[in-house]
Image 1 (spheres, rainbow, N blue to C red):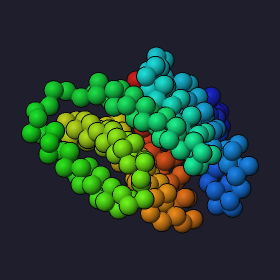
Image 2 (cartoon, one colour):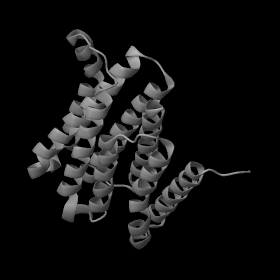
Image 3 (cartoon, rainbow, N blue to C red):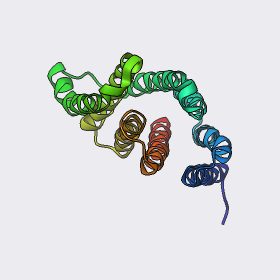
Amino acid sequence: MKFTKTTIASIFFLLVSIFDLYAIFVGNLEMEMIAKPLIITSLVVVYLLSVSKPNFWYVSALLFSFWGDVLLLFQDQFFVYGLASFLFAHILLISVSSKFLKKIAIPKILIHSIPFLLILILLLYTVYPTLEELLIPVIVYGIVISVFGVVTFLIYSNERSKENLLLFVGAITFILSDSVLAINKFYESTELFENAIMVTYIIAQYLICRAMIFKAK
């Protein structure tokens, strides 16, 4: 069997993802320090090897995600900076995704926004008592990632293609990952949540990457 460079990069992405999940499962921070930064690094390689004309803004979104991963490894010490990195990543993802969106009537936008608004309100209601000085940053981040969800929902509802479904499911999974992270940090911390955060995050990033590869082709 002949392996292409893209296949090898994809296998490496899978292996470092499993390595990182194992590190979290056994509670080995040193192993996680090695594995976690390699997740997005390997995904960037997968993307660059899969397209002839890479989207600069999508690659930039991945790089902001990389720095978010690195900063969040230090937990409370750099949490706000990690949050800011992912905030910029989502803003760039919104910018890239909005290019796939045709002109939409405002009523349709409002209707598609309802589920994401309800999820955001419920999540903020749950974690509000412990947010304190992080209240505004978390609200801003929640609004931005919700907008990403709405945009991908509109794209998929306009054209139900494979790549649009991947993008939409990727956004939903990303929102799920961040929601579990918020609950784990500000409401109740459990080992199960820590593993769920990374599983959904890895799936989300991969699905979005696959969607971008399909779009580029």
